[in-house]
Image (cartoon, rainbow, N blue to C red; front, side, top):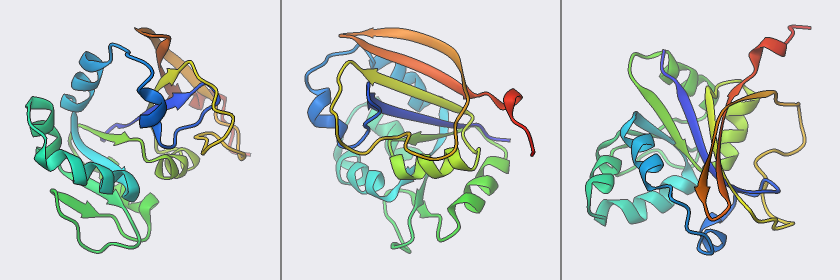
Length: 182
């Protein structure tokens, strides 16, 4: 069974949208972590908006990271696109079932970059095996939050690392020991 890993850039108040403008004010030493993360995955799982942004940039980028990004198969959660470029496959209407099928296959980790709406769905359906949060020391006070209203989510911290510039890498796994079936 494949492991599903989510990696997100977040502010202290949980905002994930449009990370790039506020990220520019910080210079964490995240290169080795992001490289190891990408090279440790066998495929990418992306929301359509993240896919569109990545597909516009990565095919013309150069270097080992770009080559790996371009070679990996990509699975895209979309109900509006039936065909995709850039080594990508649309998942279609029932994303939860499609991701369950992907996880059941043999192979290495599925890596989700960004894709907040998709991640919320994956979390709600207990499909995430590891949540890697790069938390920036910033409170925006507005914006799309990764953790909104809904069912509580119990997590267990598996590691924490200071990446510099006040940015913390927090790695969580679902705490399934506290769940009940009632």
